[in-house]
Image (cartoon, rainbow, N blue to C red; front, top):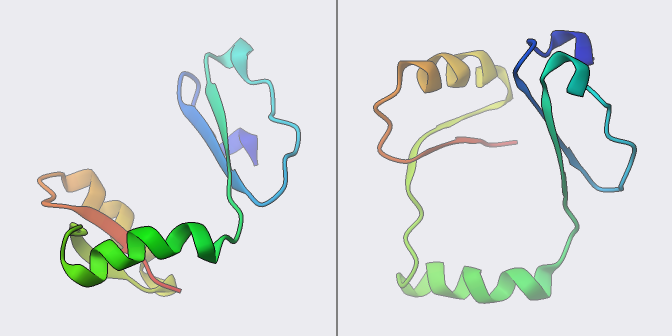
Length: 88
């Protein structure tokens, strides 16, 4: 899949387990890996802040699985007042 990354671009991986990060430095590509894990206890605090209105989420628009292309097109146009969310 790394052939889809433009020279000088960025490669980001969101994974549930650590894996090898491809070395794309010869093409000037910066790589990052973001680890995620299920942690309901850790999310309870921020969720409570949202529920109380103390933390406001700024979502400009939400897209379903079939709207990924539309989300990318909307992002490219710029001028967003918040994040774009993909809802599965």
